[in-house]
Image (tube, rainbow, N blue to C red; front, side):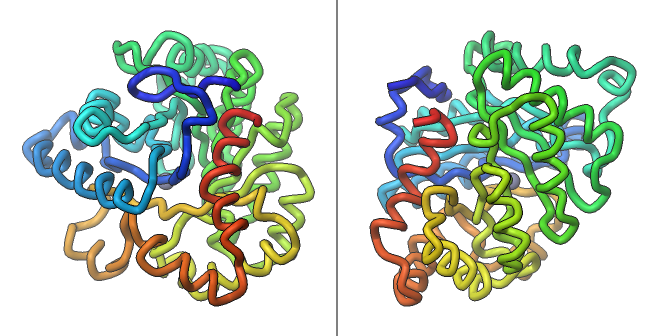
Length: 316
Ligand SMILES: [Zn+2]
């Protein structure tokens, strides 16, 4: 059985267990955090992360995959502290989110794809931010601005780092702009096998035609933003997941919430107002029963929460 890197070191893939494939301990504007640290409260951020993780563990979650990367305030020491305090198996990433889903910082803008791939490989093979904690996968993103030159560079670099290391890729997508198809095209052009890729946020659409077009290319898909009605209400997410389970795609889907224990992108009260149920536990508190009521069997639920994450991360 292959091994998966966690903040506490490698574990056998069969030990992953129930897995939330896309949650964030921290999503913060990293330039603000480093330049105006007084605007942040690290102890409070820590307490919030602990509470969310413990909540999920109370529902049997053994592993959380946190795709925080550059531009999302990735902080591997913070992540390791949370994992140590809770006992969660925490899987972390390397990669680039992109500034406004558009630009790389000058440092990477003026250097080529292979230079950026080297940075990713460093995190995968040596360790992140001066620690020995290794990334288990590579994060990329494309959103409303589409495939800008810098976004393309990130995807080509991610593909090359994946080919060099065997690490899988998680690509943040925007179904409304059909970015998943372009992201798959670029990764395939570089030679990445589709079953090493997860197209995150595919569940933001209920357009089954688009989703099946994407699935035909071979990636896993993230039905991973439960609780964010601003992108799509849960009722539509559930109907989509139920329809896809009926068509036999449970082994291609993961369920998650893309919840952020702390997110500084908006004033706190606005987050509470816009997404009151957005948490690491919303799936277990409401969604799974709703899916069962729509005819999704427990075997499919177990597949989406236990087996599909492992197949994406470990290839088995
Ligand atoms: Zn996310």
